[in-house]
Image (cartoon, rainbow, N blue to C red; front, side, top):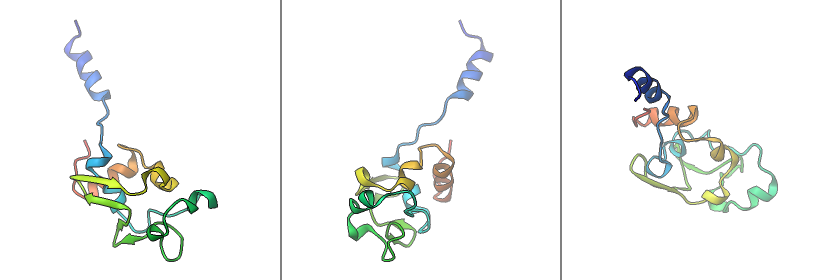
Length: 111
């Protein structure tokens, strides 16, 4: 049987799980964030033009919100181009520093 001390250590090592489809904070954090940087032309050609910024530097945003994001941030969201999303979007991992920063900015729980 585990002692209370062992349970406490186990509890502290558990990382919270964030569900991106009930969040969307990272996609609605900054118009400067969804920028293209490491994608090649073939990857960029897969992104529908209606979602690409006029200067083609990244995703088109409506304010700070990526135009490919549908739904309500913090409730239920979905990416309209998930399968072909840019690398910067793929790099933002649930519970990672970028995720937590965006969640905090939207007043969403970070623990």
